[in-house]
Length: 130
Image 1 (cartoon, rainbow, N blue to C red):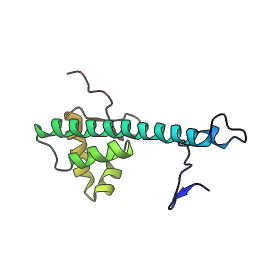
Image 2: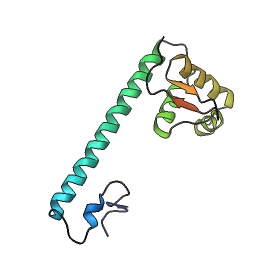
Image 3: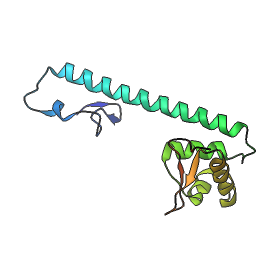
C-alpha cells in the first residue's frame, strides 16, 4: 500500500499505530511528517553513535600492535552484534586463529570482550576502567 520502490514505508516500528486508525486524531500529513521526523532523528542518532564507536576503535587500535583483521572485526561486531570467533572467521574468510587474534586485540584495546556463556565477542558499551 505505502511503497517507495521495493521497500514499504510502513515498516515495523517506523509508522505509529495512530496512522492506521479509522478516525485520525490529526491530519494524515501531520502524522506522516512527525513519524518521518522521528525516524530520521533516530537514524541520525544511530549514525552518530556508529561514527563515534568507529573513531574510538581507530584511536585505540592505532597505538596497539594488533591483528590486521581487528578493525574489520570491530566493524562487524558493531554492526551485527556479538559474534563467535568461528562466525567472525567465516564472515572475514580467515582462519579461526586469525579471528581469535583479532578478538584478543580488541580485548586488549578495551573495545570488546568475550561473553562468558557463549564466548561471543561483544562490543563494550562503556570503556573499562584501567
